[in-house]
Image (cartoon, rainbow, N blue to C red; front, side, top):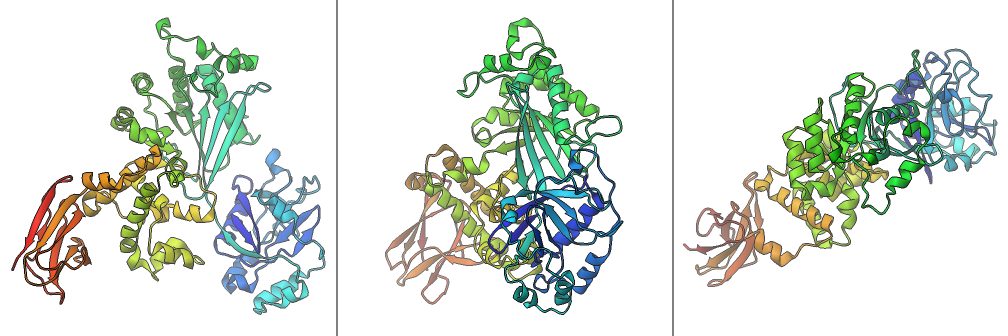
Length: 599
């Protein structure tokens, strides 16, 4: 959850596997806004900070306060590392067995004295903003009377607590974030032989739904096998080490890694072989630096040659993933950065079609044979580098970015106009987002448009957004509210986004004159009547008319750049139809067509 204070914030990651009953209670309270405006009433320097008493500015109703006051049973203690209290550990406060209600505390440092009581079970950890919590005013110590805060909340006495304790900090707003996607990579490290990189995604990513053994997914983890660990036994060892790290030392009764509840792991082969042409690779050096325990698991993948007649190491690795999947140790398998030849070899040898192919977004535009191959075999394409690779180049290709903004303006107001002030819009944005509501009622952000367009094209995207505004714009609620652009205006909007996205990705801005010529019809309206007229474009879907030309004097003409199938009507200055009831553009892109307006 993202917790906002008066001038700063911190982020808490809750884990249900640590404390199922505590997790459910905390999530319910955060989701319903119980902690909004809650004072951080107990700050003990070097020990902990505590909060969780309802306060009237948060809008907690009597029903919500009554719910928060009910006690929950204690959760079983965990003996692994996750059961210890370290810096940032979050837990419920209590006063006896089965006494937990709503108050939470955050441990400032590692503390072996915490965790001894039955109710002191960690439910999560502060993952961002711990420095903020350590700067809270601690001068009041234990002086704050909790009952006075509670009574002030019941009696709606908003200012009493602040008058008595003016330096006390308050939470202003809490935002619940869903941790949907975690990505890790197995890489070599000279000292230990293995290293992990991890990237966490907060809230609403568009993620793969591969064939799994349980459809009730809440966290999807993607981990990749590095090229030094190609080969059957090396791959098995790499995956098992990843599972142990993800389990954070927890084990089931058989000694196998015990993953957090509702966590699903997908494993990809990161590269089919070491990419020797890249500046950052040292294939021979990385192999030489591996621990002997890894080398003894199988031959170096660098030793394999096509002429050897042996199975390629990446195919052996994929066979290992298939076996791990069948054994239900992992929940999905796939590949990344494979070329057409590697994919052909893998598909011919595989028993299970990859659940996902992950690649750079440029492949979607530039590697058509690969895209056709994975499409024909039903392998979903997951793109990375979408926002950086496309939206991140807006200063290099400003005209292309302006084209995305133009599409957002044209379809944004039309699509969301009927939602203003409605329950659907409120649900879409949530309370407290009035400014965002006004903005979205006028325009769809280019990032939202891009995600929607890719999603409709069957591309899975992992946006790496940490900014709250970006998380909202990238969220499924916003992205899925955008109409299918392939179906709008004969696919014109989709074509415009495709062209703009390619220009941004290639860092080659759009040439307006060339684009206008290639991607429009030049329609000329000649006024042959004895009065001034105007041309109006007619929206086929709504019947609405939009002014398309300036005033055309008798004997003059107006040139419009339009599109095949578009319809127009001409009217005099009094609004009366002049000429035909409707003019329909029949010419194709790059062609011209002339219309004579006659009585």
